[in-house]
Image (cartoon, rainbow, N blue to C red; front, side):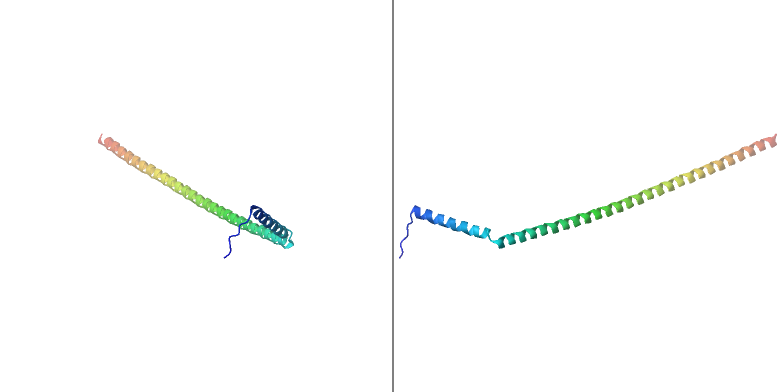
Length: 131
């Protein structure tokens, strides 16, 4: 059986420094790699293209919404104009009915007046003959 190996503080510090140096060298090697720069440039280009497509979709959606809003506003304006025309026609019909009623009332009043005048004249004539 193997015994538990006890390491001293200096050994552990040395191992940590060696691991740190190895990690730093690995990072430097990766940073100086020309393929890494190409991959990052490709990633950046893809990201820019993705944002551009998203902006195009958003612009198209906003334009579509604006067209729909304009169509709805035009439709609403046409509906309102039709309602106003119907109200004007209804008002004109009411006015015509009022004029017609006034004319009928006037004709009826004239007829009653004529009948009253005829009765008055007949009564006067009867009185004149009776004398």
